[in-house]
Amino acid sequence: MLDSIPLFPGLPGGPELLIVLLIIVLLFGANKLPQLARSSGQAMGEFRRGREEIEEELKKGAEGESDDDDDEAEAEADEADATETEPENKQ
Image (cartoon, rainbow, N blue to C red; front, side, top):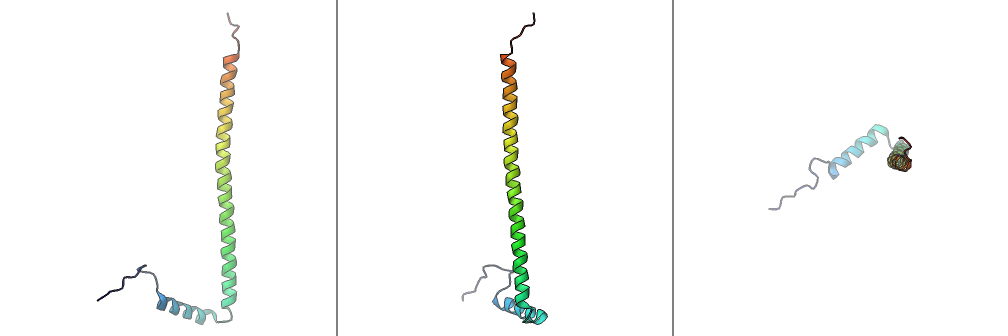
């Protein structure tokens, strides 16, 4: 009557994840799992910090470019003002 439609087709469900967890325990052993989880957490933390540093550098670079554009525009405006205010003594 009612067919269940998976929300995420193609992704492993509960039984599949349980089998994968069992295989991991058999491969690494129960004693090494906490150490494996700890090192994985540290690696994820380092990855996150690296990503945040790159994002900050990109933001600073984008802000620096807009500041450079503003400085260039001001310099051009100053040059234009200087040429307009110079008296011409050429006769």
